[in-house]
Length: 291
View (cartoon, rainbow, N blue to C red):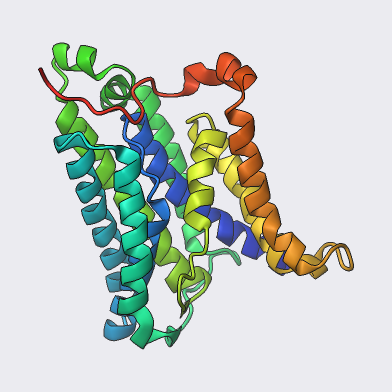
């Protein structure tokens, strides 16, 4: 049972950091549905870099860097060109799905490095995830930078008139957003499951995306949701450790995704939009083009 709890917390860490990246971008008004694609790039290139150099540090830095570059690419299409943010994000996901399969295929198999030492039995990234949640909440809620981010996400025209550089603020957010997604992918491939395989992220990015909506753009609610989904994910892999003989493991594997779909359908209802819709950034997904 203790091992199940540890693995659940490890899984929740990846959901937390990836969803945190998406949350930051969305609070500035930029939607990126390509979370999974960015995670795939961060996981694959981070894995290759670590295996080639023998350094975890290099692997994580590469994962963060490629995530930042993809965030900037998404920003170019969404902010500079004013394109459809959903189309741009889907393009990143499709690119990640195909290109990482080609790039990573020669490296299929285990990482071959000593495992990262735990802290009190937990992955050090679990503590990093909690720290990042606290920092994000503080910046968004208590600082002038957070006020600028929330302003460009609510009403970019008014923010621009008030002297806030909307383009610069949104680019900052999408780059940081991509870096966190890339880091989450690298944590998956270098710490949680250090074995490269074809499309090994397998839906984690979409769950992270759903978590942002589930949390109503609140970092602490998002953390609670990540803990829930991390537990459900681990339960889907090892149901016999907690509920032996209850359903087959193939049914359990569908549970995290079924709940994800259920949450999104619930949030699409008129009741939810009427009661909680104010939490959503008003300009989310809408391009801002100066007159």
